Length: 604
Image: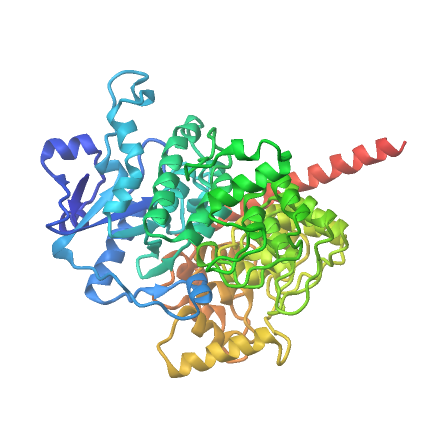
């Protein structure tokens, strides 16, 4: 594994390809006995060079300098703090003397001789690609480099959401999650670096095969790499005796392999004798094999994590299997007894909600036919909220046809639309808006998009087209669960070390979506809101404005310039965002006109 030591990386003024650096003797074969390696995941700014103008890489260099000098303190991202419930301790420290950087352009071969050399599986580049999981496993640290910048061609704005949509970046994240330590550092600006503790759920929501690829053939090329990663994870779980994690990975395979030309791993545990079930019907054989492979002996039992066979079958999504389990007295309203960190799911999640979240719509249909409850009571999360969170438009339609209320909220007071906005689930947003027919409650939707990672230009533009208020002030219901949660976080802000979530808790009342985006460090959402006309001088209950927050040292320079009225360096990014919104709005209006015209012709 070729790397470059940190001192040399910080001195770079231009990123040279692997072959040139190798000839210059600048590359080092990494040795775990001499130091630690850091893997850099990033999106290429141009087609033939990752960063021809050195804008993206310079952010990484400045961020590393600021961390080493103490100017920048690494914060914990909001999702990590929400899921874990506290601020996790830093398990890795940066020391310049023993740190080596892995970066694809200078660590992997780039130039191949011959027109079709890059397509050969025996080429050095192909070998390097297949070795990405091994490289990530060797690296103790991972940096996700995703500052908000304009692409070289000026056609798109790059940032956290575009990074999360890239197929290669999704593969790298999956490999990191399967390596045993899913944490990484997200570099959003030279002075804003976040610790993200990710889980298997991230890749389940965004599988590598459903990501974007510049070269379409790469989609099929990564299939064996994904299969290799999953095989290693399954084997690791079995070797460690971690059966609940093994069951999660085994049954989530189909989700992680979406969009890829590959078969899932079958018959992981040898020894199932189908001859003993020759007299059984197809359903009995299916259940017997499923129980054997998952290490269960009965249909109605729970493992150490409080999951029953039908919970895993709902994750698996095999409709015939779910039906066969129900015929053998499995409960269609069964629920998880404990939370599952690998999937970021809480306890008391109904099996219908599991299928809805992971887009297992055939299994949903079977459960609905068995009269699974679409509106569970108490602290159980509504399946409609889970379907929205998982961007399952078809699942939303199925649930609403079964009389689920699209405006119903969960225990925190969050609606299905807010769940969809939080993850940027555009298909779910469109479905909910269509079902709502103008009666859907839009309040808090932009705040939800700005709070988590859903605040892309597409999400925000669609909400504004639906007449969401770009300057809406956040005012949760007095004494409601959400109000109590933020009040508690505000108290922690005063008594403990400030975090992003605690700072938001202190400033939440009266905050606009722009203020929320700035408080939690989602600069892509902030840039989009500014481009869409959000006002920077609206005060919250503490008399603080977005303009005050933009002056914070961790805010990117282009947002500071926009606040100060100097748009010379900012206009390209903001104008690109405005242009994309105008194009999106125009295309949606044309589609609506065509659809209405078709309906009128159908009636005539």
